[in-house]
Every structure is written in C-alpha cells, then in structure tokens.
Image (cartoon, rainbow over all chains, first blue to last red):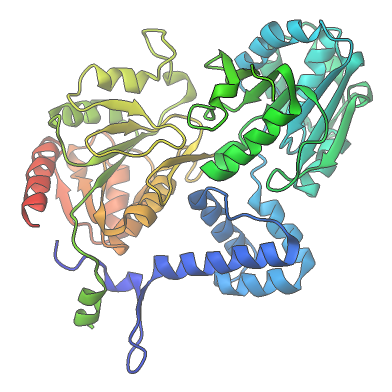
Length: 296
Length: 213
C-alpha cells in the first residue's frame, strides 16, 4: 500500500495553486452545481436521487450530447430550455415492457382484482408510467375481469416525452411476440392479438383500452396526492431515489390510498426499510404487493 | 508532487471491500475460492456473476436466489443477496441479483438501475466496479476472474486510478480466458494470480494490511 492515488486520477496544479484535487471530488462538485442549477432554473430537485445511478446518467448524457465536461452542461441547462428537455429525458429510465414479470400480473389479477370487484367505482394510479406498456397491460387485465368500465386509471410521469408515447399507444410491431409470450404467462384469458392492430412496423393498442386512462404530468419529487385510490402501481421508480425521497413518495402513496387499498412495487423495492412499513401489510412478498392497514 | 500527493491522502484505514466480477465458468471458480475465506474475513465481498434469467431459481424452491443458496451452504462467511438500501457490512458476502444493474452509493449501500445493458450485460461488472470505486476509493480491491466478455476491464482500471488494488486471475488458469486477458490489457494490474492462490493471497494480504496500521 504505497502510493494509493495514482497520478492519472489527480488534477495537479503547480506554483501558487497548491490544491491537489481528485477527479472524483471534482466530478462530485460539478454534479452538485448541476443539480442546483436544475433546481434553480426549472424546479426539479434531483438531490434525492440515488447518486451513483444519476451520476452515470449525467455522464451518459454528457457523452451523447458531445460535451466535454459537466460544467459545460451547467451552462446549457441554464440557458437552453430545449437542452433541458433532452436532459430530463435522459434522467429517467424508461425500459419497460408489457406484462413485465408475468407472475406479478398473475398475482395482481388473482389477489387484488378479485377484491376490487367489490367496489362500484375503482381508482387506480400508475405512478411513473413511462411509455405506457404497463398501463395497457393493466387495462387489458381489468377488461378481462370485467372491471375496466368502472375504473379510472391515472397514468402519470414527469417525463413529457414518455407521456406522449404512452398516449399514442403505438409500439414497435417486433415487440409483440415478446409481449404475447408475457401475456400468456400472466394468465391472459383471450388472445393478445385482439388488443392491438398491426400496421407496417407498428402496433397500435385498441382505443377502447384508453377510454378509462387519463395521462398526466405528475412529479413525484414535489407533487402531492390528487385523488383517493384503490390501487397504486409504482414499479422500478423508487430504486432511483434515496431513502429520504423514497419515504416522501411512500407517504404520498399512503395518503392517497383508501383504507385497505393496494400498493404494487417493483421486484427490488420493498417497504422494509421505510417509515411506512407499519402502515402496510405485505400480501405477496415476492410480487411486492402491499395493503394499507391503518387509517390516516 | 509526491509530497502533495502524500499530504492529500487521508489517514490510511486499509481495505474495506472486495468486488469480484466473473462470467463464464464462474460457479466453479467461485466455489474454489469463496469457501476458503474465514468467517471473520475483514472485507465486505460483493460478487457479480453474469448469468441468464433462468439460472436464478433455487432448487429448494424457497424463492431464494440459486447462487445465494449455493454459497450459503458452502461458505463460512455469511452470504446474502444484495438488496436496495442495505448497508454493506464487512465480513459478509453479497451476491448481485439478475436483471438489474447493481451500484454502490456513497453511504455504502446498494442501489439498482434498469438502464440498458452495458457490454451486453445487466448487471454489468463495469457499472458495479465504477460505482464501488467512487464510494470506496483507495479502500477497494477489484478482482476479475474467468469469463468470455470484456465487461469489467474499464471498471477495474477505474479502481486502479482511484488508488485501489487490482487483481486478475492468471488467464491460463481460467475456464474462459477472454475476460482476464482483457482486464490485464486495460491497465497495469497489481497482481495476476493462479485461481488456486487467490484465497491464500487475500487472507495473507488483508492480515498484513491490518497489521500495517
């Protein structure tokens, strides 16, 4: 363990500037400035995002846009609104597919939808819906269970670009084979082909699925509860947040849910380390389905 | 310049974590090596083994990850699946789950991401190593074992740049030599060791490291 920091990782200045700055420290400093600039100029607070993964995405965005350092990006963010739109798009991860993790959808159908049938009106909030694949998956299942007509689904995201794609409901035709496979595994009761129309390279989801979905911009970093829900679906969103923001968001969910309302999280997410664990009962551990048990 | 670099260094605290990247041939390699480590081994170990989605299910059918079960039964060190927000503790072996990138945050906790594959892999060794290096800086040891991919080379180089220690399995002792060879080509690796010597090396090295204080 002799010289522990190699020369290449240090920015060494000579003469009267005697600071030796580690490149990691410099990058951290620049990222702090960048996050402050974004908050100051646009009101989006990324300070409570999981730092390691947002650092990756900021660096990826920098390379994609041909910038040579994060400080250059700060200037663009402050002065170029179009660049910020692009930045925002790069900051959200939109990898999704229909009926992703089929057994989760199967459990949702069997354990949650059967309960939802006892209500005359059902409100569902799909928070962080990205490009909409999962919203349509849920709508298809609700339809098959005879529930869709009494449902109001709120599908929200902070990324307007994703919301536009979600509203159009047009997906690459080449994805349909995989989606069909997932649909069958998730306990689909009909033929998946009944739910879309393929034309050239594209497949458009049936408009009847959309009738009960409202797409809207909602920012989990700052926006509050907007209606009482029977079910909230928020998968693979909390993984990008730190514990503080996770707790804040889960509180909004807890406040939004009706008594005995359901919460569905992503595969790697749980309430175990959160402030809300006492307010929920885990009804399917592996599928990450929770039920609210306390009154506010 | 040397003086400046020395003054910049914080109090030497020794190594606290070991990240391991392994791909094809990994199960056999890990089995020769992880069970040899003593119960009170002084490092936290984070293992990333490339594997398909279908190789995950445990034989016990208890919803546990196959690799976690497998090494729990064979290691004296406690073996766990890496979970979100979990504080990484020394003396424990953490296994990266499939499908998600695994990252290490500044607070020495795990986080996950569904960003696209890197080097055709998710989880990617580069992603884990880079974030681990950011967090542990000169207290990190990176180890690349057998594999048929170039994943991990950049991450290992980053560990070295940030003052950490890098070790690569001697390619001729690897079931698939591509990954160790690529890692060796990426930078001046500290140690290139035959698989059978790695556990002894690490035990002696960490003992010496602690004794140095």
